[in-house]
Amino acid sequence: MTISRLNHAVLYVRDARRHEAFYQSVLEFETMIADPGGAYVFMRAPGAVGCTDNHHDIAFFTIGPDAGSTTAGAGYVGLYHIAWEVPTLEALAEMEARLKESGALVGKSDHGTNKSLYAKDPDGLEFEVMWLVPSKHWGSAAHEAIIDPLDIDAERLRFEALN
Image (cartoon, rainbow, N blue to C red; front, side, top):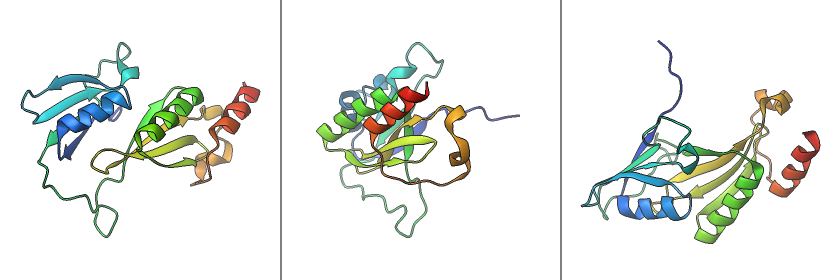
């Protein structure tokens, strides 16, 4: 028996409807199922529509406005982030603008094998939006933990020249 991929993530949040609105407006996710009372929302990434048999990529369950913030990483174990992949550097640049406009963008890094934007959702849970470098261009980066500053425009020029 072999695991083939990560199918979906489920997050406890203060308000599933607020997350639904954020994921729709900023990341353009599609709602698959939403509880009329706001208890849960199941969503799918826009690039998945029509090209996958996956029902949903993420689900949110409301636990209420008084829920405390996560302390994962500050002396407690827990999930650091989930990562969403975009198909091109152009799409990554567009996502950078959307994340900035929404006030969600908190960082960006060049990891060699992928180019990454980091953002936080309405409850402060971190997520990544990344472009995966074609494996033929990984070189030694495939075996290194790289965290360099990211310049998307420079990367666009570099990869246009390589192809």
